[in-house]
Length: 84
Image 1 (cartoon, rainbow, N blue to C red):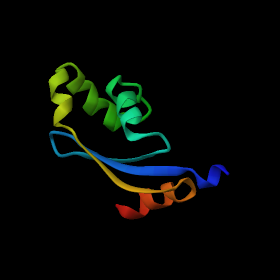
Image 2 (tube, one colour; image 1 turned 120 degrees about the vertical axis):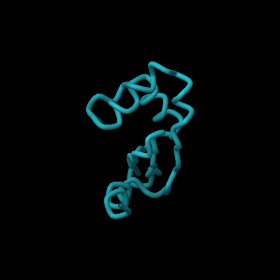
Image 3 (cartoon, one colour; image 1 turned 30 degrees about the vertical axis):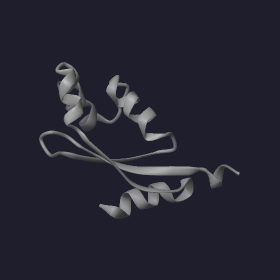
């Protein structure tokens, strides 16, 4: 049954126009909270971008967040890497 869960491929664009494409099986708002609290050190480029903005909390609103696609979990990683 876990193969029938829905995953999401998303794109975050920083104020300096750097793009990060990721995937999650969570609701995106939960994933963004995860990033907002800087709980993403293993994602070095995104972490460094967010770290600079968290100090100026209002600038986090300047990140553009887009859900690119919703699909079955087993297809999420394949799609993430073939889209870009």
